[in-house]
Image (cartoon, rainbow, N blue to C red; front, side, top):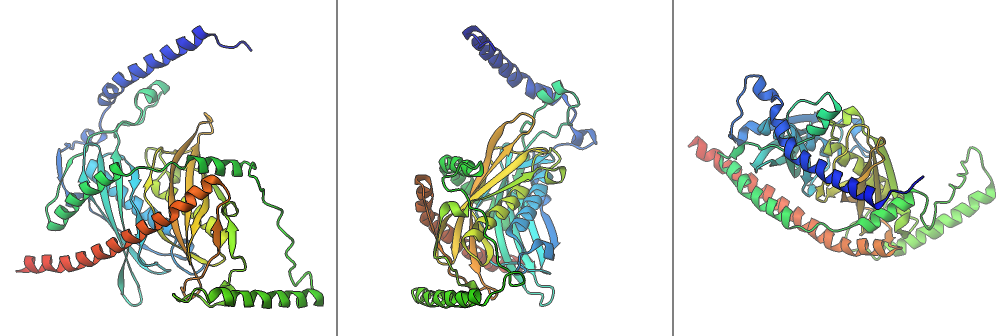
Length: 463
């Protein structure tokens, strides 16, 4: 096969630059020539809209299929509902398709269990040129006691895309690629809407000023592990001698001696943790005191189907977060043998999107463990099976806590980094944990302040 000459390479570069220039000039013009479904239906687009128009309230009942072994709802399920409610709110304000751009830190203040009635309220806090911040509040109610309690609060950023109809030809699809459009200005009216409006700009500036850490090395290492290139490959699973198939008095006596030795070690180990109440359930005693970080590596591969995507065939951000939690739980279970609950999710920025037909690969590992909680790093990449293109879409940190059947924290093993990149991830875990604890305290104070703030508003209105 002949190698391309220098002339051919230069020609290809010039042609590519010329095509990009033409596309840059013609795409916006082509988009304006296409009909707008909203105006075609006899409506008129406005420049300003009040905040209450975008308000959305969703009510869901937790079913057993959405819960773990303890009957508590998966955080991924709650996150997917948050994303759907926020997406509807953003679309109501923009009257156009909107996609998730980022999700701020989400902290869960109380678990939700089977049968609970969950209420998700969302509304646009502020809009800019083509983007919007949507605030979401999650509350739950017990159907037996009618007790209501606060679950979580989230802020999501959405970008509005052109609502023009999908092109039918290849050339049309080239010129009608997704383009951002301007959204109406938000008009806050109530005191609470004004407060949210002002705080939204502060959060936006904080997002812009926050420097995104580079975890490309650990992502590359995890990719090598998934391809079988890891330094220490997993050994074959041992044969589990089930009593129904393997029974002998020698094995029974040796097993009882090992169990008694482990029990003595656990007593000494637990005596060092007297500052806090931890589970004393013998079934929750961890036989291993530490694990190498690569032992916790897990990988989940999903094919994006039409039910996983919006009307633009772009994968729901909430679906991605649900898959991320599944992978994070697999890594957490490899470190700790206990019941697991997701306590928080750090900020997620969607660098790129995936669509219907793409293969989404999620990889995770426990980056650091504490007494009864652990931090799990999760990365996501999407692969287009038609073009072979693989792109990094987003990553984030999940905080997972280990409890027993009585919801008492369980002491978990330590995770030991084995590589330079793993050590860098491990050392940053303490600072990230302090940040999460501070944000959780701020959220609690904010909820308390809002509860004191609302009655005052109602009293003034009545007077």
